[in-house]
Image (tube, rainbow, N blue to C red; front, side, top):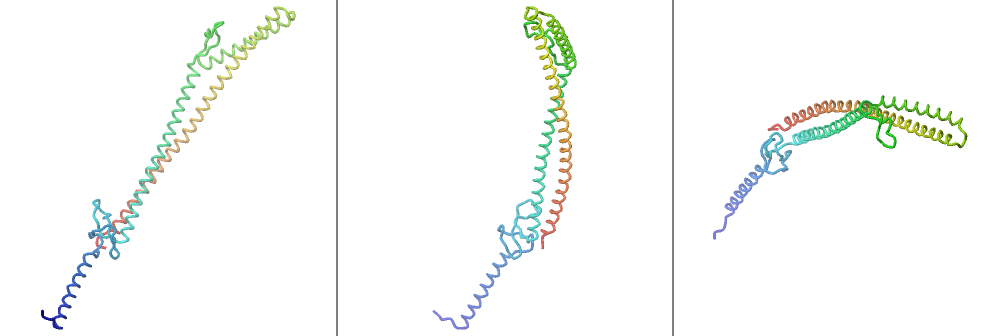
Length: 260
């Protein structure tokens, strides 16, 4: 085997250095980032001031190099989109709940008004019963007619009490007539108490229904205002958030412009 001369060995070293240098230079060129918007191979890879990300300006998934300003603008834009979506969902739920509550008060008002109409106009009230039974022999239709009939019966009871009280005063104490007159007084007093209780309960029923109607009407006024205010505010804030999202998108377009 021939020995390399000093000159030939030197030439080999120079050639090797040139090849090695060329290889290193080629590798560095392949890994280095180009301008913003040029394609890259590995997500989140970094090269200088650039990071490999999915192209934020297109819908197709393509990896490109982007600088920090572009990445920040994309983050801000996605945040604006998320804020809009979250607010729209929450505001819609709140409005739906308020509308549901308003509808429940409107339904309650309808029920109360129907009940009052029945009590006042169509309900049949027993005034007198067939002796020894619970079968009404005299009735009245509607609240006003019933109150008038009950009031007339009260007057008759009071007159009966007065009549038999006067008779009892003339009776011989302990006599059969005295006992009979006393029983009549007791019966009228029992009837008087029963009819007065009926009138009181009927008045309380009407008062409760009217109170419910008043409360429902107040609640309807309050929740109608709440619903209308909620809808108006939702529209206003949605416009603002959409404007913010549009602005963020425009800022992203500028920050992510290819070639930067």
